[in-house]
Image 1 (cartoon, rainbow, N blue to C red):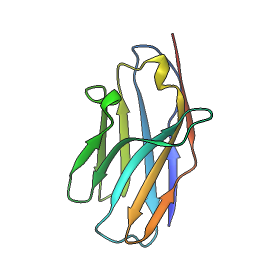
Image 2: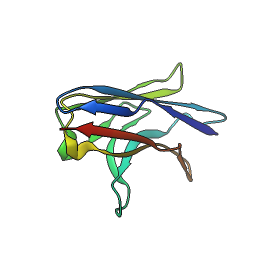
Image 3: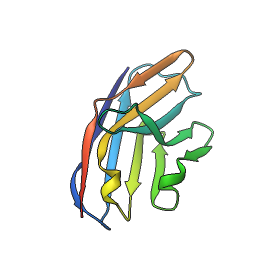
Image 4: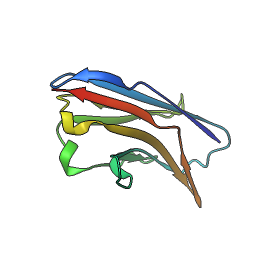
Amino acid sequence: VQLQASGGGLAQAGGSMRLSCAFSGSIFRINTVGWYRQFPGSQRELVASVTSGGTINYADVVKGRFTISRDNAENTVYLQMDSLKPEDTAVYYCNLKFLRQNLWGRGTLVTVSS
């Protein structure tokens, strides 16, 4: 199984950005996909996740600003980030969990300038 993330880069405060993560390979139909982020010197923290059944979970700090969605036909998960803040600056990672697998994509840097 491979996870290929795209998006990221530089945005201004108040702006928007979309991250995408395509996953390929043999994936159990019951799974959870999500986005995590990591600040320098800190552990990765959950940003948002969505299960194959459609249950969505957001970190409190992004509620109302970020939207996670998944396209099961395309095996892709998206993170739409609006009203970006400088404190959203971090490396973002997509994640796929199924059965006992906990898989990560390559991180993508999101930088929000003030």
